[in-house]
Length: 362
Image (cartoon, rainbow, N blue to C red; front, side):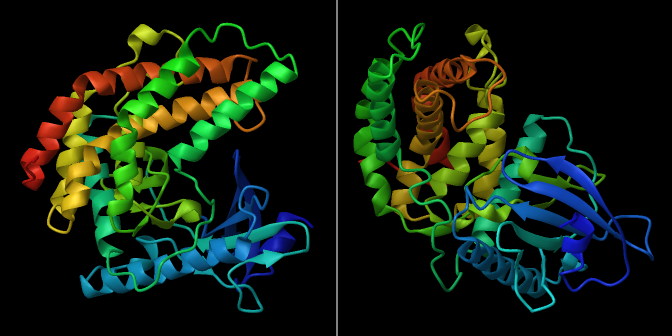
């Protein structure tokens, strides 16, 4: 079925055209234009039901979160709420998604936005405010959200997957040269910080985004954050996920595909700016356990991502897209270099966070 025919399955009138926006690694996205406007009015997406196997659960989570955010924005006196939160469009049958039996689709209102601004500490401060505000508005969400990707940020599971991948690579005679001591180093680092990771269960479950990177935010012409988008991974979890995952990408001096590992390092200026913004919103509602463990979210994510990249390399590059055979190994080494840098700064990271939230170690 053509995309324009798919679009007509939703409660939209006078559809003029449907234009492909991008073909992503997860979902394919299209812009929907109506006859009365020159700008797009809606976004149509094909949901990757191989990644998100329970589409009904996925859409139910997004719908619940969006409704709660709309209510909060209305209470705050916000204007034009349709353009400040992801809003689902119902199908002709009143559902939050359409399926032809093989593919799954959803439609949302289009939110006008500017191009993504240049990454700066000030931009990261604004991102911190946006993520903190997102979590704060959802802090009193009445129901726990079921996972759309079970055990998504489960470090113990990822370590086990890495070990299983190594065994499978050896049994199947895959080329695993150039690894050096990376697996051993990751394993040792995991066990060094495992006592803190084990304490994460002391934190309350909150509604979190689980994929907090700059590309999942929309900005206006003044460089202010309009809202967070790509809510596929929104579910119940720990705040360390949203906090640590953002810093993994934003506070690296270089990108994760850079094989010049000497360029990798943890940017403390970005860390402080983001933390200032995030804690402006969140510091008054954090529990003692969250205050104590927030610094270890900064460590967790380069560690976990290095493990995931290495496991995928050992498995023959079956999950992450690669442009050359050893790209996932490069990514794994890059993230390990970032982890080493975070480890070197951990006392400063911890002291900075504790000074803001008012936490004192025993």
